Amino acid sequence: MAPGGGICKEVCESRSAYADYDVPTANLELRSSPFRKATTGVGGKHGMPSTSGVHELLECPVCMDLMHPPIHQCPNGHTLCSNCKARVHNCCPTCRYELGNIRCLALEKIAESLELPCRYQIFGCHDIFPYYSKLKHEQNCQFRPYSCPYAGAECSVTGDIPLLVMHLKDDHKVDMHDGCTFNHRYVKSNPQEVENATWMLTVFNCFGRQFCLHFEAFHLGMAPVYMAFLRFMGDENEARKFSYSLEVGGYGRKLIWQGVPRSIRDSHKMVRDSQDGLIIQRKLALFFSGGERQQLKLKVAGRIWKEQ
Image (cartoon, rainbow, N blue to C red; front, side):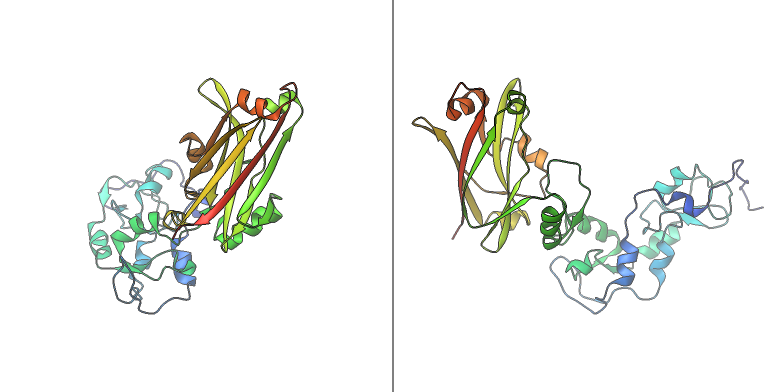
């Protein structure tokens, strides 16, 4: 028996028992990545990715992700990450001895000497980073996958822009339009639908890029409102290169909004809650619709242009 160790009273589950946890796939991406040459990039160091195999020692045996301090070990020297230590109830998944609170300081020190490629290398990021800087970079890497911008359901699909465009068209049946100007008419004749109106987004191909037009109903405090806004399918720094305007009106009245499209890095809810778009009070929207104000007939016109 190892000094200070004791066999866990409960039998530890095998590694496959933890397959249901959502864990990063950094190591799988790293091993399968075609980019293995020395590179120089903004924010990363010039050099070769570590090929000595030392980084494999830093794989957690439970989640298979790279470990960061604190790295824990059992009395027999088997290591695992701090997140999985709680998952296995302080029981070593390799030898079943109690883990205790032993830190593997030697392995933490070795990690400081490693340089590894970004996990999003296969998407175009060729930078090399010190081991402990890699995770921070990946949280904001411009090449990290985008989340599906569809707001009508909790969609978990992620990927690059071409993949998401096809996903929106094929899976969500989103309308696709070419051009930088548009006129959309939103019609709801059922009073209940007027109160709870939601619409599928529309995607516009303009200047070789894609823009998502959202229009929906929600409550701003206690007041029922409609809101229209545009999101850019790309990063924020690219979104700032464009501007757009939205216009709605009727009976000699007109509301106009001009702004900068938000990146789809910002969630649909974040943009809506920030009120960064054209907001129309429901009473005014029904006034624009005419009739007995029991149905919604709004025409939203818009234009997208590129700033010089």
